[in-house]
Image (cartoon, rainbow, N blue to C red; front, side, top):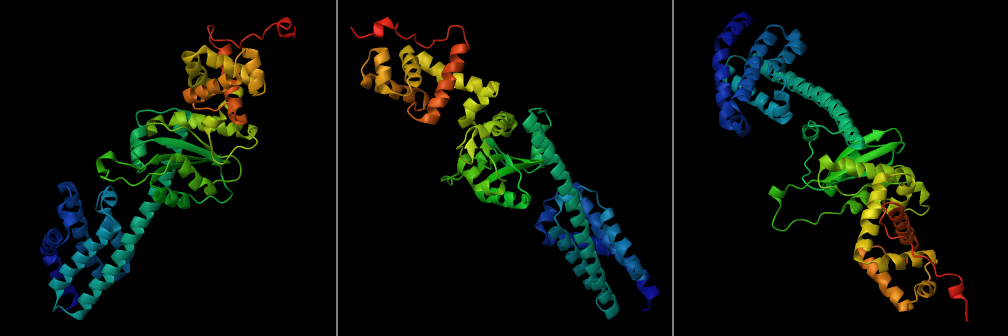
Length: 403
């Protein structure tokens, strides 16, 4: 059979071949049968375009690049997002198998032509998916930067959850923000690999010399097993990610319930990052709440409110004796004897009250760092509300003179 007759025969059987290909797809590829009707129809268009394109290529082999590309132009663009490259190659293989069965006995040259053309289609498919992946990567990077910027500025809107979902965020639990410096050579992929290893989702924002990570535990309550695997704390996660930051301070914001609330953690982390140098021996990473006094002195309203509500208010509500004792103890250089003399109590009473302070608020006044935090809270609480308990007045000078 000459080439002209072969082309005429191929055109006559093209419809039957396309029908056979679709039937073979249903029989051999489970993912095809599970697809919605619209996408199955789009896959069928691709298969039919492949058969027609082979006939055109067989007529003129020099048209390989343009004809092969036309196969994928027949499908809607969203098909690239619903059909993977592996599935596309399976589609090509099924089509080639059916074509080989139908042309068997028509000459070796036709079988060789099918194999050669299928190779060109496979390379074209790889190129199409590579360009789509590159375009998607650039879009994802821009979208991720937009989401991180929205979290940092607190300018969230109704579209934020959909943007987060488009980035593949799987977290269904608590979230916090980690802020540090950008290293000279920053590898985003290494950070993402470490995050996957730790079982957390991560959004990455590079803002000049500042690197921001939004961290969330990738937990789905509907898929939790009977014996859940141990989940690292955000402090442990921050320590594992610490090597990926540049030199300087690294600040971890407080934990918030969900990603939509991450702006609260971001504000605290950014405020702590701005004043972290004021703590000479700050650990790396350091929690933003451990920098409350520095943040308050810098004018952070959130830090002032936190110090008053977490320290001053609970002590004031529990007992005025605790506030009085703490004031006196801090003013007397953390001396038990001097505090006892000022308050006319036994030193053991001072010890007891300081222990009660620690039980009520969780801070120990006997440590230098925590004493600084507590004293800042007392100052802020005393100058804030009008009915606040003031520092006790010392005894008159004459009353302290020995008789």
